[in-house]
Length: 441
Image (cartoon, rainbow, N blue to C red; front, side):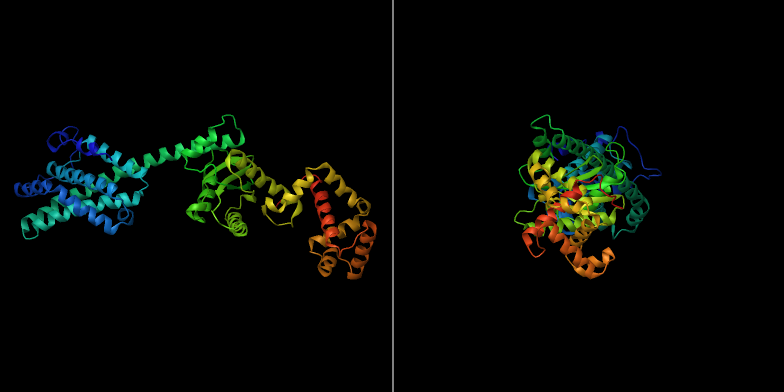
């Protein structure tokens, strides 16, 4: 609030007159009480100072105000004190111009990130300070005490309700306007990531949202059973966002989100200096929590860190691809996947030479389904003979015989880690080359 916003307010004689709405059943103040109210109004600055001190000692958000903002609150307190006493003198609400000023003041507090609950508490506290000042003056005067009880107290309830509605309406209107503005920026940011046409669009939208474009971010993709429309259904995406924010410190909360090809996407900033393994554990836990909390989610994938529009797009594509790769290569029932686990598979699949080599490595047993099934089960159960035999429903000696047959056919040894790794990668490539992935549920 600039100083001219307070000094430009209407005075009691003029602005309290036109468009006046009087409090129902209001009784005119007695001459003695009117003199008292007029006297207190002259000390509005002193009352505002007392009000500010009370706010700073009782409301944490006001206790941390800087000096400039505290002075702003003080000036507003002077005006609010004058409005309260002026309204009391005439037995009605402030002029519409003054109520609009209160609305603008509330909107400024929203822009300064002051919560609505703190703002409403401040108005209640200020009114109580002004009321206490009156009570202190009439305490020893029974007649004035009765007038305070039966005339001023009902008006106080009316006035407090009016202020609460005025403040809340203006604050929430500004909040809705800001949410709409941010949604529009999020849409522009998403368009700049997936459909870049304007070279500066990503930077402009990110800067308006307070996002550091050169800082690496990780994409998280949630595949949904029934993808909501980005224009009609906001409930599920907002619920997912709220859940993700609730589990994150401020510096790791998602800075942007999008709906893209049946996925809910979010980009999360990397924490400076955080080891990669710590980051992966943290993100993995948040992904698993989302799967627990939202049965509409089929699976969740995480990409690699990237910066700028190209880096964000690549990370998002990796997160979505991680789900497809995980469905083909991981154990049935798993639903949380990270692209880093499949990066080597992707690189091999992109090379025709490597794909051909992998096919040749297992070609001689591909015609014998029981051997191929045995090899896949062997890797799936981490080379544990007992578990593999049980999964296949065969005797352990039968398993050993099959493994020896595979070694002879492929010309290698399961004791040779290099050969074992190549066979493992070749099997994964074979699984990736099959048709559609199995269902997640």
